[in-house]
Amino acid sequence: MSVWHGNQHKKKTSGGRKKAYRMKRNFEKGSFPAETTLGKLKKKNKRTHGGGNKPRLLGATHVNLSNLSTGKTEKVKILRVIKNPANVNYDRRGVITKGTIIETPSGTARVTSRPGQNGSVNAVPVSKKS
Image 1 (cartoon, rainbow, N blue to C red):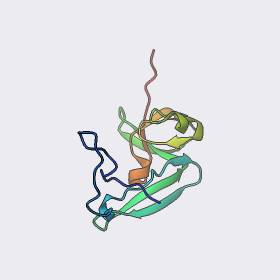
Image 2: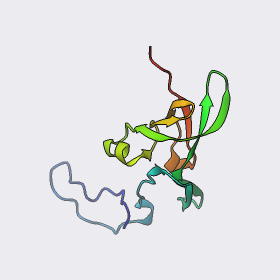
Image 3: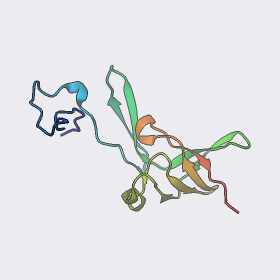
Image 4: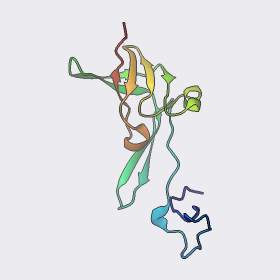
């Protein structure tokens, strides 16, 4: 079972139903999100349209933390997921997506990469509001 990105399920502007004029096409087929979780490192390669490969990160333990003021990047451990603005349920399940606030030994950080799309977790420190 996969996701289908066609438009035959939609109605016409007049409110009528669209008549099926062809079958579903393979290029309209989508996929479910990778939903990277905090846990043992696990990667999976997905063949993309055009024959390329897209690494899917399914589990992560470390993050590449880039400090923009010093220009240094270091690999640090992810302690826990604090908040995920993408979905309320992702907070509870510990899913890491772009924009997720995570806790590291260096402090809190915000994820800037898309782990399910490019296979790595990159983040920048969150500045403390005074």
